Every structure is written in C-alpha cells, then in structure tokens.
Length: 134
Image 1 (cartoon, rainbow, N blue to C red):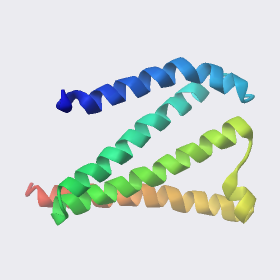
Image 2 (cartoon, one colour; image 1 turned 60 degrees about the horizontal axis):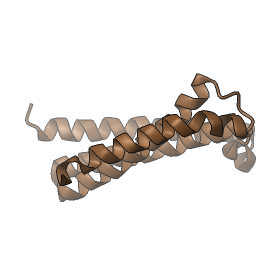
Image 3 (spheres, rainbow, N blue to C red; image 1 turned 135 degrees about the horizontal axis):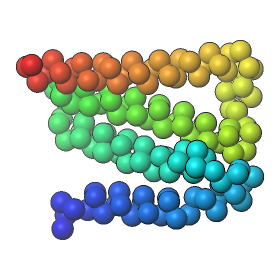
C-alpha cells in the first residue's frame, strides 16, 4: 500500500481539481472555459512534480544524479510560480511583476524567469545524462 500512496494522492488531486475548478473559475469572474480550467488543473500537478523532484534529489544524497535532480526541482518551482502568476493575472487581472517593477521591467523579469526555468531544466538533464555514462 505504501508504494501506491503517491499515485493515490495524484489521482485524488486530479479528480478534485477537475470537479471543483469550473465553478471556481466562474465565481472569480472568469468564463470557466477550457483554457482557464486546464490552466488551473495543471497547478496541482506542478506541485506534485516539485515535491517529488526535491524528494528524489534528497534521496539521491547529492552526487551527479542528485545535483541534476536538484536543478530540475528548482526549475519546476520557478515554472510553478510563473504558472500561478499567469492564472492570477488571467482570472483577477493582477500582474505582480508589472505592479512591482513597471510594465517594461515586469516583462523583463518574466523573461528572466522563463530563461531560469529552461536553463535549470537543461542543466539538470545534462548532469543526469553525463552521470548516466551514455
């Protein structure tokens, strides 16, 4: 049963997300369309990816595989924050980057976050690839 626990949690989160989000999107002023709903549904999956990425990196106790997984986990975390930001902007019309930094610097910060996500993921996969001896 312990080996099935992560899959149970994943399935439960998916079901709850799919069932509750259309009403949630409509109550916050959104149109409840598929794009908005699927944008919100992806957030629990990103959370699961972050949690398990850090858990795997910790379990590997450093080393080349662990370092690669750690980089992937940080990339997933930045990605999740960006996706949460996009959903808040889409549903509530609030753009945190533009509010704090202005429109031009806010777009620049968004671009830096994208580059950081892709860069960390690429470096993580590169480390894992090199460590695998292929």
